[in-house]
Image 1 (tube, one colour):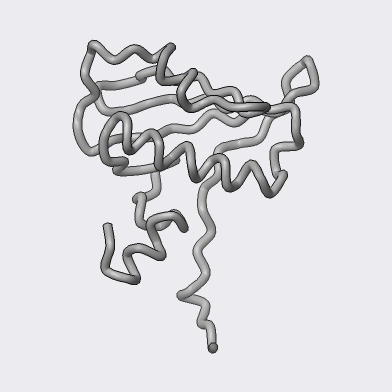
Image 2 (tube, one colour; image 1 turned 45 degrees about the vertical axis):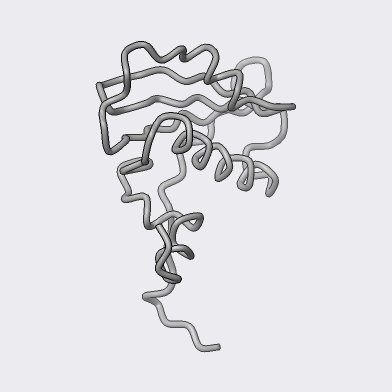
Length: 122
């Protein structure tokens, strides 16, 4: 299989920061295609998205925008965290509605949707 430079996509991953207690954190900016209901229980959604050593805290920043903080004890570039982050994006979309942009980039540029787009799925 031959690749071209057009096949390479570099995503704008949220900045990785180390917290004073030695954990790793990223703060994701996610916009949805529709406004988020005001009655959403963000504490419960944060619990649903969190799992062992992947603590998620969700807050609304605008009617259709979220700030999603992910904190872990593992180094922030650990391969498993990539997969956990992609699963988190899918779960956010399932719970809150279709994602429009992640870190200012159209959702189709992110690998979890990129492959589906090439196959005609959405």
